[in-house]
Image (tube, rainbow, N blue to C red; front, top):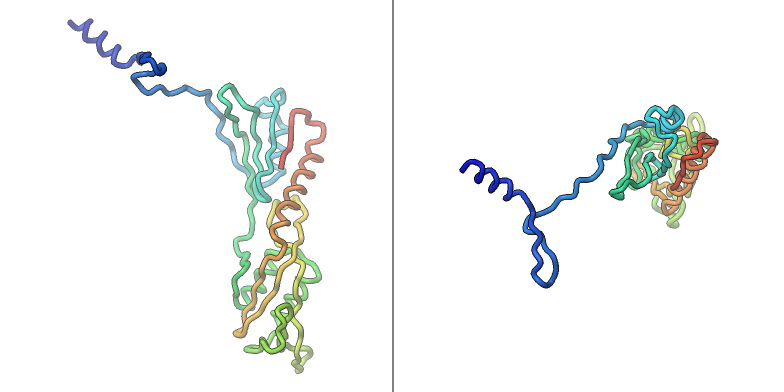
Amino acid sequence: MIKKALEYLVGLGEAKILDIGTGKYSDKPVTRICEPTAKAITATTLTSLVDYIRSDIDKKSSEKLIVHVISPSEVSLRSELNNDSQRDSYIICEALLPNNLRFGRFVDPEEFNIMLQSSFVDNSDKGLLLKVTGLIQEKTVKEVGDDGTSQAIVMKTGVAKVGDVIVPNPVTLAPYRTFPEIEQPESKFIFRMQSGPSAALFEADGGAWRNDAMERIKAWLEEELHGVNNIRIIS
């Protein structure tokens, strides 16, 4: 009796193939057992990725590898397809970026000034905006004469002198938006002010800087990985 019971229980777990004329069916759900895939380690710089590849710590020098530039702030190293059409993911690099970038929102001049100084590469337009927001007088943004492109504000122009100054617009700036190893791409911004006063930057390049940054990442990696023959870089 015990033997028959065990045989019955084993039979419950066996899938039976049924041919009912319209095709073959299984009387139980069947799950494919796939090859295991590697879990990626994480890093924050492109240098870490290059060091990992060149160290060959996981003995992957004989395997074809893909470096995928996913975005200006994310790059991954993947394997070729295995027998289950899946890829191992070896390392994912995600750039550490400033968390105080505020685009499309008006903020007070002090917050705007701090954002510019801490999260933008130095250039002439950055210096001009710092001067404008640092010397602006309270309640002095003029809507009169605003032609949709330029604005006039009252700011200090000397030790004890104030005067109307045209707000620069558009401006060319380079926020920190990609990995530190890469030259930060410049892009156009619309600079606006409101009474209060408050200031804001609006992106004005349609996101073209992203493509520029990704191409720079690819070029940097191609140079750093020169001579590593089993790597293909895509962006």
